[in-house]
Length: 406
Image 1: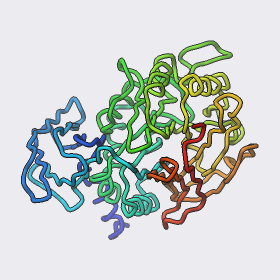
Image 2: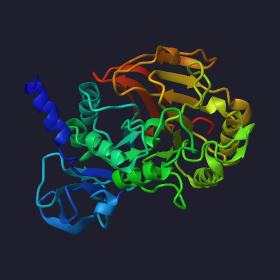
Image 3: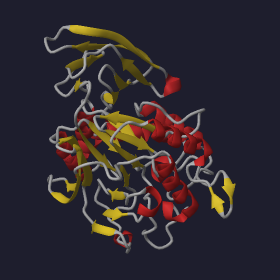
């Protein structure tokens, strides 16, 4: 029976996604827009007095799914701006450039979200947390096909959710994918049609970069004392190497990670991806770093070789939230801590509560996320990370008064 609730759901599903703020620096920002057909739309950026300071045009084409991402440059550090798209503006359409230098940051990490009210509770909670970045670790959205039309449709449906759209209209969004948005549950880089998945991801996510040479979507960004390295553990998985030593990141991504870590001057380095960095998963699960022991050993060797202190792992995927201390002191000089944050939606998997010798905390909490805070302290930058729920409760927290290994 067609009732008022059905009408509301139809209106939400038919809504067009609004603009999305992407990669943000002290002098620039990336802005994503979508139109209902090929168009050229004006984008105007205004200062605190309402005076236009930048006027650009975003051109959408059918070839790009009627999406466009533009980079707005020449902005002032630590400054609040508003913007309009196509002559329209809303209260949520604003952003604040990073200070230069930026002494602090406040990021949220999450995975496994859908268009239901539970996920919207998280988006509204995050909008109250005064974030400087939102990092999505995959299964955001669930797509489960590499069909290009369906890929595009699912990104638009996900982005059209009002609470999510309000949040990312002023909080910079950074993303990687996991199996369901890559194209299929527990899949690897041999998935047919993965080029369509990458194309749709690039069209709809305003990241700083998308892998290299037309392969993968890995990227990195820095805010304050934290640099985040977003891995892609899907594109190259099992496409290189031998049967007893298959690839996970792939040679190209390994070179990028080693080079990027070696060049990083950030006190804290968050290495993040959807796939968990441990082997404590439900029985039979084939997609975790524990299934690739030689690749995990390579990761530790890269951290050691680059002299990277202050490394923290962040992952998602498993529909259970956990905090795990990796026994890595003999290799990298300190134990690396991992936070697993999942899910933003309501579906839990109890079997993911598997034993691990370094397990510090484990909970099945629906509508949950990870909050990262970094700020100056007496001994250097202080990093605090907390697993939270939609009510804003801190379920588990860990703090470093100085970068581990320093």
